[in-house]
Image (cartoon, rainbow, N blue to C red; front, side, top):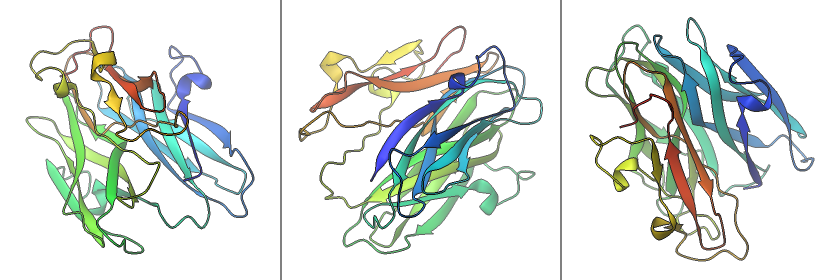
Length: 272
């Protein structure tokens, strides 16, 4: 892995000046011999109530010096704010593999379904089953219900895995895109972890701020020499109907041994 960083629409415009399309040119920390690979995932959303929850983050225009990152919505959805983290894989790095899956690869948005899965085959096989991280890039979920979506994996082996994008209860999921990152399970100086608000409380006792505080820090298990870069993405959202969809995840207190992760909402949003 070469580099990572974060992007938020408020770097380009204020939250109270919503736009359907927001983008920014990101310069790489160095000039590469060829264009690297980039993957982008959602980690913050503020969408007005009353419309379908529609948001996507993506990249384009990659060359060996820069790329453009986008956070968009469409139709009648008002996107006040969106945030994303991104990872850059330098040319020739064979340890990491990136990819993505869109539910429209399986079925059209006019025929939504609660559960969608697909077998992903790696471009080159690993020696042993790798670690696979999945995260949300695009959400298009129906109005009039809670926003419920999750992505996860099953059947990971050295050749590939099955990726899932699901909803539940009365939520209509028209389409979604999940990104994935695979890397050797014994890769040194890399750590991945999935945090859930239900690590701290049951889903039916929602509260505004979920924090793994100092006594519940996420520990790397093996110390780094210096504090590492940490990126965070959404992989599950369960937010109540009748209010704007407001959610963000971020970190604090990163050191060589661990960090604190936050999963927050604000105003009148209910985060289950």
